Length: 150
Image (cartoon, rainbow, N blue to C red):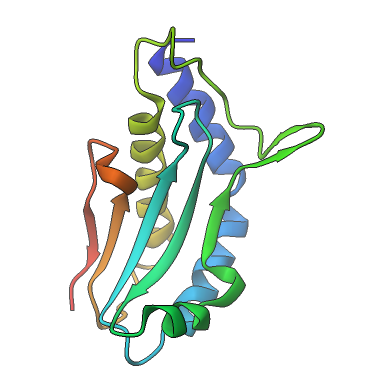
């Protein structure tokens, strides 16, 4: 599978998860603690570069543990889980040993674009603090992306 095909398949999987993620994002926005200094969405590609990943929301502040607990079960907007029947959701995989591209960069870029579109679909909410999309460990070519400024 080439990079273009991979992007197309990955975007299709993300699109299928949009409604669920939008509801979680609404819940995250409603639960932002007053002490939060920034809202951050981080995309975590798998270490091996096969194509699995997760997307989670978190706040930046002094007591991260307590404040991030306030976001509760809604903070994970997207997560690939290995099940006996396969991956859920069924993201495409690549073999990093033979692939001509780094799936971790592509995953972060596609997920960042998807998150941006989710944000816009909610009317680019005014949350009164900076909001940023980041790729974990510097992966991705589009991140960081600022969604809102304070």
